[in-house]
Image 1: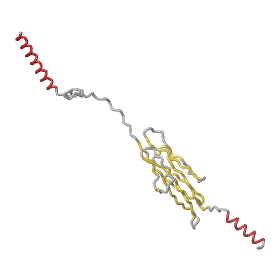
Image 2 (image 1 turned 45 degrees about the vertical axis):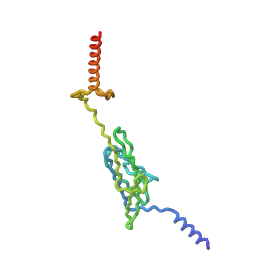
Image 3 (image 1 turned 180 degrees about the vertical axis):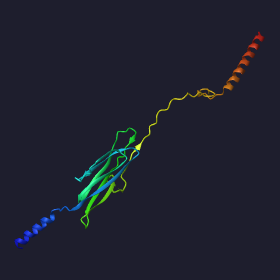
Image 4 (image 1 turned 60 degrees about the vertical axis):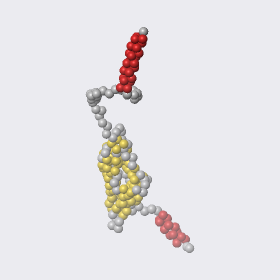
Length: 190
C-alpha cells in the first residue's frame, strides 16, 4: 500500500471517530408539567450529566407548574425531579423521585423534535403524570369542657363482693330472734 492511501485511510478513520454535533435552525422546547396535591410543596429539577437546565429550577409553595427546557442540538438528556420536604408539622411530604429522559432528534427538514419519557423512582415504571401527593393531617381544636355528668340514680360501687345483702339481713334477724329467745328462756329458768 502506498503512503498516500495509508494517510487517506488514517484521516478517514480519524474523522469518523470525532462526534459531530448536529444543530437545527431553531431550538425546541420541552415542557414537563407537575402537580402537588393536598398541600403546597417545593418541586426541584436537577440535571444529570451536564444536561441543559430550565430557566426556573425550583418552584416553591405551589400546587402545579411546569419546567420548560430549550434544546439547540440533538442528544440524550436526563433529569431528576423531586419535592423537598417542607416545614409544616401536619403534612407528610411525598418523597417520590421522577427520572425524565429526553431524547432530541433532527428530522429531514432540519427541525428538532423530542421524545420525553418519565419514570418513577428510577424504575422501569413509566408515567405521564408527575404528581406529588402529600398527606395532610387535620389537627382539631380542643373542645370546651362541658358540665360533668351526674347519673340519675347513683349505683353502688363495685367492691367485688357478689353475695346477696338480703340473705345476710334475714340471717341477722334469725340470729336476733334466737338470741332473744335464748335470753327469755334463760331468765325463765332462773
